[in-house]
Length: 293
Image (tube, rainbow, N blue to C red; front, side):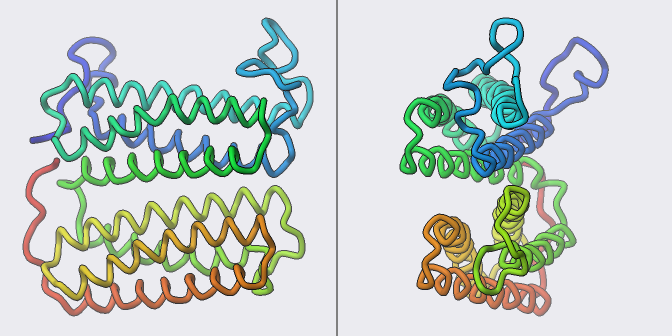
């Protein structure tokens, strides 16, 4: 069943031509932007810059606008998060109400929608209860929402994806790994100081890695019937989680053991991605991907 049905039958032409998969794509981009801006706010120490006001800031009409550069970081994070929240709720409403949304896509979108109020509450608590446990939970809930919408978006575009898209995902994942390590505060990092800009770039690379691995893992199973490839792709998924988790932990704890585990996971992930590339180059595809989800 196609998710490419029109969202609205009336209104401007561009809106009439919009489809659910386009809505998912925009929502995914907004969620990614919210995460990156949240990292920027934390890295610059701007989380409390709005005078502990939430959801307002510290100046302007109705106390809505920022008064300084630090409060701007927090304000723009909340501003983009607001639009991301509206997009998530809109996607959830379409998934719930439209019979044309595939049964594999709708649950992912609905879970992400249910998690959104939880994420909003956690964002509020980072202002009033600035504790590391709350900050971590806020971050990983955002990553979970991002991953749910990434899977849903890839499913929605299924009929338009080709083997070339899978190869692009593989090369993107392989390119992000050395960039991720280079931007890390480990001994192998090339940065002399883990500045807010470096942190923002590294987390942007993390999102690119997660998205590309999701694309590769899903399209690999669609295009090829191979037990060995399925095992390798499973390892790729687990190792990606390890790189994302240990990369964040090594930033927070600065432990030589965590650094070693992080580098080891990244090396193993690179090996698994190369193995995926070799396997998919040797295997014959099972046929065309039929229909969009």
